[in-house]
Length: 307
Image (cartoon, rainbow, N blue to C red; front, side, top):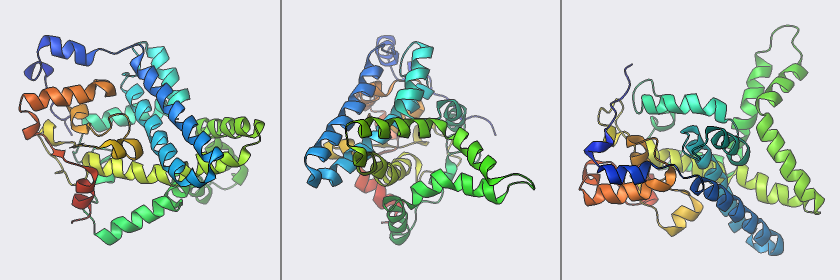
């Protein structure tokens, strides 16, 4: 299938505007990564000092775990740092695992956005669904079932399909190697907390958000970005959705400007911190009237559930 049409920034921005928007800062991306980890650390401290706040801490940390994935996504576009080596090291080791696997997959999604061969279409094509169906999906997310399927499903499938003479241990070892960055990161987190006598905080304040809140907000992110948009949509301005997010939504659902997804697909090499300004400029020029833009996440959830 041919690639989707690409937009020319010169049709939307002056040379000066585009130069400012497209500049890849040597410090802004790193500052966002530092901010993400500082928020996680603050939520950890809150949960440790005041255990009654652990439910809130789980939501904050789960949203920042999504934030780390969003910043890794910027690294996949080589937009986190202008130095390619720094970009990839920070994206892989300080954001989220699997940058080397994610980059070709994700760029293929951009090349074929909302087309039949889009590798991400499976995430959005089932919508809209009934309210009951969406509720079941969210329950599976919040009870850890989605996390278990994502983390252990490949191992279970590998064990079921192993060849005669292939040991179960070799399957486990192969899957552990595939997920080594995830395992190393979690082992480091557990060891660091255990050194301070806070081993329990790894389970309550890192693994629990990772297994519950993160899958749910990741689902909401996927719904907001592409659900209920036309398959094989030819217009690049309607192949993704921008969703306005208030302060609470930015804190608990949509960190680091991930809600400006239409702008991201229109100009995919813009750093995430440039997307709000791009949106403001496009609004002033009357362009957003032609784009897919929704007023908030509740509206998008309503679209996805047929409300």
